[in-house]
Image 1 (cartoon, rainbow, N blue to C red):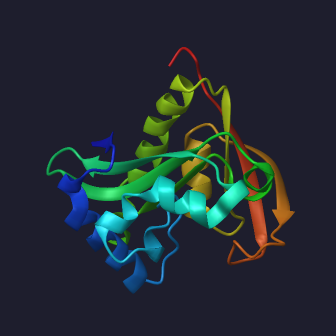
Image 2 (image 1 turned 90 degrees about the vertical axis):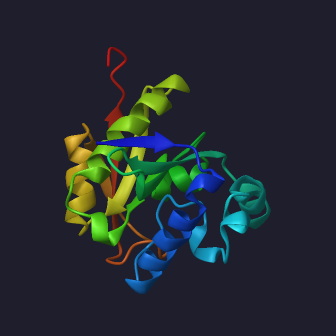
Image 3 (image 1 turned 60 degrees about the vertical axis):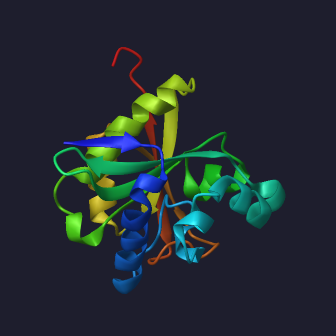
Length: 178
């Protein structure tokens, strides 16, 4: 259905169209490596350099992937895997963030993106990963649960990341046997 690809100039226009669609819909840019702050693909593709400057000592490296539909090579989502977790991500953000293009939602892409990135996390030696979502975000909760997420707890959002003020924290064990 989809494949995860490293960002490349081949997808420059699609990445910027993705950004425009999220902005037009007033959406969050979870897992998009700061795409909301970029005016061009050339600026965005330097995410490691740009985010290292932005977050300084709080910076955590990430692996960023484009979720591309195999049938027509269309960008449907962006996902990132952050490792290792710093104190902030351990509480509020988790290892993985992702966004699906609003016009491509409700087609199973988020679940497939998460399933695919778990193999990548495993290749980095992860035995489990942390994902977080707003407590009232039924779609994200369903995606996480479908991929084996186990709720650890729900916390008050004291840093202003969520829309509802509560964040759920889920751990997904990574099945070494596939």
